[in-house]
Length: 187
Image 1 (cartoon, helix red, strand yellow):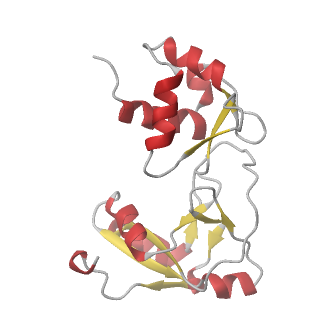
Image 2 (spheres, rainbow, N blue to C red; image 1 turned 60 degrees about the vertical axis):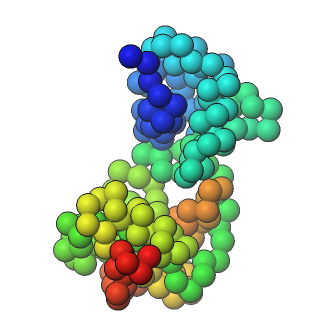
């Protein structure tokens, strides 16, 4: 049975963010992979072509991927566990950002704040709805309000990825607040 485009998209995220070696390709220092090498690698698994790759990039609701202008290279916009510099620009954040997680992680976050774990950055959302959707992927959702403006004034750096995800290296617990009244019926 052949992979759906959705399955290929998840596989592409795995390869470009975490395991390029799984298909025998390399990422450069900025996370770029050669499209020709990626297509050849995917074709060793099953039939895959440039039109499929373009469709995955264009239709990805999370806008996880980007082509270079000449479409000879591709990379994930953020979410890497492999050390790459995706050339993020430091940006002053809004006063408040949000982090969606699962209830099962709340005790740990309340003890140590938000840490990147396997990723290079903590991912933050500009709105409650997006944070809620992220939280649902981890079971019962829980949303933190991040005092991003206060963090920035204290010297913490923030970056905005090409797909609108806010990134920072960590969020100490003193900059976290629980979102009050974030019920499914309100979102």
